[in-house]
Image 1 (cartoon, rainbow, N blue to C red):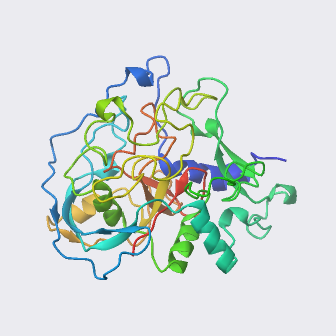
Image 2 (image 1 turned 90 degrees about the horizontal axis):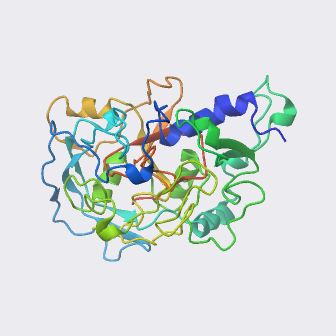
Length: 377
């Protein structure tokens, strides 16, 4: 089976890999420090300062909290990041889309404690007969110049490299795998049996939105996601505080070791690859895994300058819902949605977007085995 045809890379793989990283990083392999040599605290800029979070004092609108959800009071907070570097290894400039820090107000809402799990998504599929994007075979009408034998259902899967590689080319560790879908996250020989409590992955934005609608919920706005992830705290680097490893202990499922090599993930945080939900301490609002494990779709279209637009008049943005359309100057023709939280592949060698104010982005039609979601109501 041909897994790396032109259409795969041009239509799917490129957009999937732009999903979480959203850029191609310069890298000097001979000078780049290993993870163990990186500083633990990212460099921040003093140009913008966080102001205190002011939580609403209102009570939940219903007497009984929906199962599996927590009440987020909403309120006014400083949104964004003043981190100068993408990674703790000080690669500069690529978090600019999370600046400037600006004041935002959101009303209260309920939010899922965890990312939607395999068993929850399976219940949706059984009830509705829903077929995800990764399960649908591309048609000759969609791709008239592609040989029929190459039109196979599948999705992008992280594929470790046999040796160290230049991190400038992310296609080295991603492959389009026929038969990869939410039931088979890493390809047809993989399974979610025994992984009912793991977050569902290989879901596109549209798949996630369909589940949310069925459940009587919706996907969070980017502002709702960040307010909730901060847990009532003001301007901290991570959902758990300002230190990556309080008392020497990891607080999220992220990548340690030599990225992206085979057996490169040392699993110092307790997990190699994806982890079940709720295996790390929750944040101040009782939310699990808002840093690491899997990226989470939000409802907002992505534009690189959206924060600048919101902050132009100096007023507080009230319940912002994102721009009306998407524009990423690095891939102008590819509509993208904002993703948040980072994943088990985030590493201080390459991408530390488990930092709570930073942003991810991805083609809304591109699933992968490190992307999931949670809902609000």
